[in-house]
Length: 380
Image 1: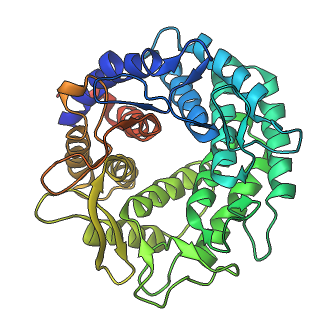
Image 2 (image 1 turned 135 degrees about the vertical axis):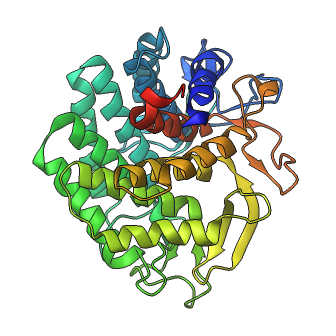
């Protein structure tokens, strides 16, 4: 994989030092949400739990691989601060969504997406530190999800209090990612049972049997939000679910290859823009382009999916993984020294004026997976 050696060097020499340095607020002991294109922190009125959790997990993984010295201490410090400020930050069960500049609750909403990522962070931080408190806190968080975000018809509410009646696949996808990481950390049957329930939800409710695509938005009873052919589909999430199903199989689960192959092919056939070779942000379940811009993260998830496809013996998957890694790196030009353009148009012009910290999770996730699979061949 020709692009991997460059990607790994970029991660170790530029990206990780940037986001542990300029990207970390030493005074607060928390990560910054954004940097500008000069790599300077951007002050915001609120700091989200999700961003802190993603950074904790990412630096835990980097430290476990020996890619960033000193990450252990930053992970321990940040996680302790995050627990103190966000967990039951208003005195009630669950994790608050965000805090203000003084550490007070900015949003008291309990958000499933954010809860999924703190679970993910706790699983990875435990692997790094061995601290049993991380697992106890993960169990407490799962119990809080079961109560605070309980919903009829399977799955969970997106948020409590509920902002709208729409139910979304995205937080459930990340909850599956988190409980799989937790299961691999603990080996407990009850953690795998949670993963099984989320996989069943995906197979029975989230994937359209006619198109083979995984839809984004649903009514409260998990019926598609729009008429057939008009539902939003994100190619990046087809790839992300393909990879997750692969992880589920790796850990002992069973999913039909016909289902997962349909996800992968829908993403490739309908998501790749022929003019640029990049992955569009969204299409419909009939394959029409819905959002023609390009974000970095779908390319990262495409790399992960094609790493999984390579292991499954799909012809040409390794070459396509290399292509998508190269595409991913175009979002991170040398001039940004470890940063990225999160979203661009067809001409490569940035559509946002900052670098969101949350993107590191995607970029590094792709590099971690590719290195695990192809690391010995990276220099070839």
